[in-house]
Image 1 (spheres, rainbow, N blue to C red):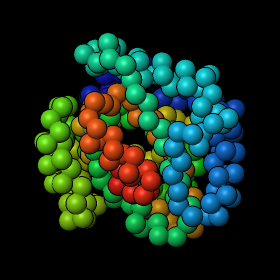
Image 2: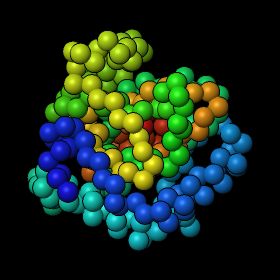
Image 3: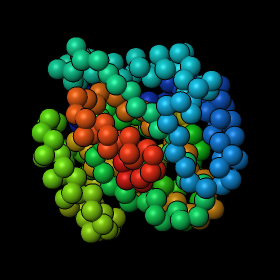
Length: 237
Ligand SMILES: [Fe+2]
């Protein structure tokens, strides 16, 4: 695997990590949850994954060695730091699909892994393609700068502008058509990212694994994340 792609093209795609059996388990767990939530949009975290494949050691070891490989080759300065893993299952399964699109943001973690579980295949291309704008900012630990960058990039006006296709010619703007069975990795801290629109009535489910929290010791970020989980704030992931 050429891990340098995370810096060169902004992302890595790997097609031999998720097996058919993994996918079946991920899809079964997701479909059960969709039934429970009766077709609404939802997110699941930590404890919600107990007794599912998402918390199984075999599955996690595989993801972890993928992450470690990227860290060892591309971000050796992080190799002696412990990795905080933050997982989110994000399901868009109901109405208000539009509100779930173009929520461009930066993550607080260095590595973001995206595992497509259910991806629609609509002819109108409203399939929630992943949009990434790599290297919009640098890795840094300044909390105030982080807040300023988030206020600047994650507001409604900038998000609206970024959702326009015409910008493609001016920015390093990549649209990734997600394929079930693949696994995607990018630097979520430096890459501004979001997803395109999903057609009404379509289901899109992705598992997001975040590793190496840049603001690990910040209580503000920790509390903010806790509050977001409680409130189900849409723009954190
Ligand atoms: Fe994200």
